[in-house]
Image 1 (tube, one colour):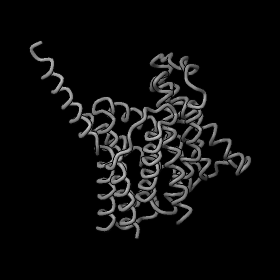
Image 2: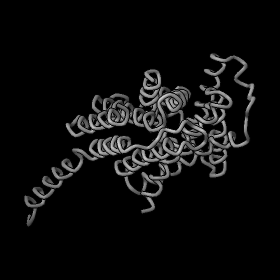
Image 3: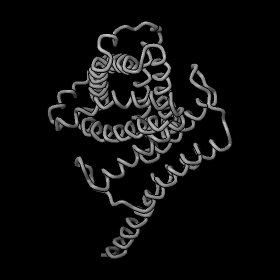
Image 4: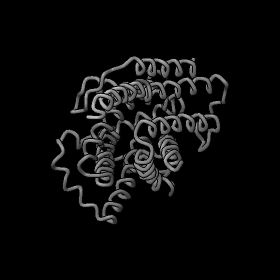
Amino acid sequence: MLLGLFFAVIAGLLVGLQNIFNTRVNDHAGTWSTTALVLGLGFLASMTLGLVFEGTELFALHNMKTWFWFSGLIGVGVVVCLVQGTKLLGPTFAISIVLTSQLGSALLWDSAGWFGLEKIPFTAQQLAGVLVIIGGVIVFKFGGVSKEKREVRKVKTHMKQQTAGR
Amino acid sequence: MKGILFAFLAGTFITLQGVANARISQDIGSWQAATITQLTGFIAALLIVLIVKDKKWKQFKQVRPIYLTGGSFAAVVIYGNIYGIHSIGVTLTIAVILISQLSITFLIDGKGWFGVMKKEMKLPQFIGIAMMIAGVVILKF
C-alpha cells in the first residue's frame, strides 16, 4: 500500500513537470507535432526501461489480445478533448472539469470493477472523500483569481474616472 | 456546453487510459503495456501530423533541449499509475497523482522555475491542497 502511494506521488510529480515542459514545446511546435514527439519519446523510454528490467522478455507478448494494440488511441482522444475544452472554456475552468471528471470516473470504475480489475465497493465515505477533493480542486483553481480580476476592474474603473472628459 | 463536454470526456479518457494500462499489464506486464500504448499512440499522432501536413516540428530546434525530453517521463508515470491502480485502487491513485501534480505545479509557479511566469502563492491554493489531502484521508482511513 505504501509503495502504491509512493509510486502515485512520483507519477504526479512527473506529470506536473512534463506538462510544463510540453507546454514549452507546444508554444513553438503546435499540438500534433508536440503530441507525436511526447508519445515517441515515451515509447523509447518505456522500451529502454523495459529492456533494463526484463531483458528480451519484454518482447515475449504471451497473452497479447488484439485490442491492446488500440489502447494507445485513447491518448489521442485525450489530446483532442483537452485542446478543444481549453480553447472553448479557458484553462482554469477546463482543467477543473477535467480533474473532476477524472475523479468521478475513477470512483465509478472502482465500484463497478469493469475489465476484471479488483472491485472496491462504493461507500458514502468514498463519495464524501471525492467531493472534498473536488472542492479542493475548485478552491485551488479559482481561489484568488476572481479577487485579482476585481482589483484589475477597480483600477480600470479608477483610470476611466480619471481620464473621463479629458 | 460543447467545451464542458470536451473537458468532461478528456478527464474520462485520462482515467480510462490508466485503467486500460492496468488491465493490459495483467496479461503482458507493465513495461510491455507502457511500451505498446505509447507506440500505437505515437503512430496515430504521426499519421495525424502527416495528414494535416503539420510542418511545425521544424520549430523543435527553437525549444530549449531540456523541454523536449518531457515525453520520456511517461515511462515512469505509466509504470507508477499501473502499480498504484493494482495496489491502492483507481480512485486513490488518481487522487494522489492529482495532489502531487498540482503541488509541484504550484511550487514551480511560485518560484518561477523553468521560465514560468512567477505567480504569487496565495492562501486559497494552500487551502485547496489541504482540502484535497483531507479528501484522500476521508477516502481511505
